[in-house]
Length: 115
Length: 115
DNA sequence: TTAAATACCTTGCAACACAAGGTACTGATT
DNA sequence: AATCAGTACCTTGTGTTGCAAGGTATTTAA
Image 1 (cartoon, each protein chain N blue to C red):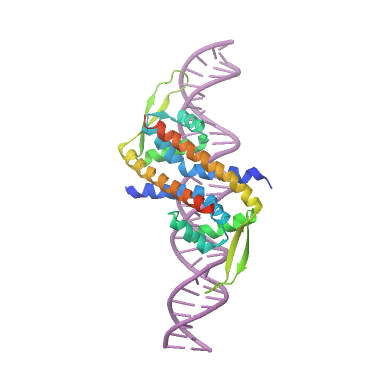
Image 2: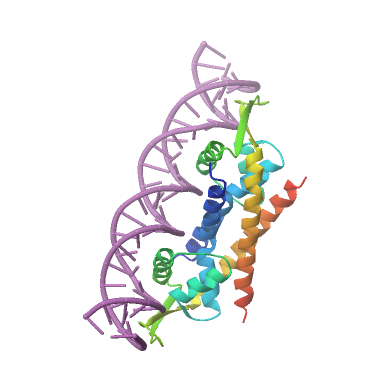
């Protein structure tokens, strides 16, 4: 049995849960296009694939959390800059709370587990 | 559009990522049976359904992270007490690291987002 | 024997991350 | 003008898995 398999699989699982949150957080501080979002996430070790990101951005747009505008690129095809909406900021506040709650929950179990 | 829908859905998503981790953490500090695990998770606001827990425990057992023993109950049917294995403890260490990494990642984005 | 409480488990559905594959624009090199 | 490399967008198919709903079994008490 491959030891790293379970861990790797679970890291993926953990990431899944916070992906939307992470993306909203990034966009809350400035507009970005898909590739730059992926890059920024990679920088903080939250690795995400293109095939995950594009559908997710489209979903968030449909939900009204994001909009976008096209912008010329210095090199290559135009970029789709995503922007967070007011509604998106509202929801982000809720996600902040959800993350805090989850963190507290895990910390509680962790400390309890030290017994 | 229902405001709470997105948040609720996302809380579920976040929970998903840490469920295996949470269960291993709980079992690391003592043997428990399914219903008591669910109860303990509820106490720290990590709500999980039976239909999620039973298949998950079975999966973790198949992976060799857990084993179980039957034990009589003071009331009602016998209980299946799950126990973490040595291998499970090894993997748990990896999950601890994964959780820390994820937390750090989110905190980084969050702080960056305050700009 | 019926009911309530506890505990176990399965089935079917829906959500969703990802690998792989595809399209299209730009600028540089042949 | 044709080709290639780099960048950027997007879709399809597959597999995993959380959950609601429904089901089985044991014990105790009325």
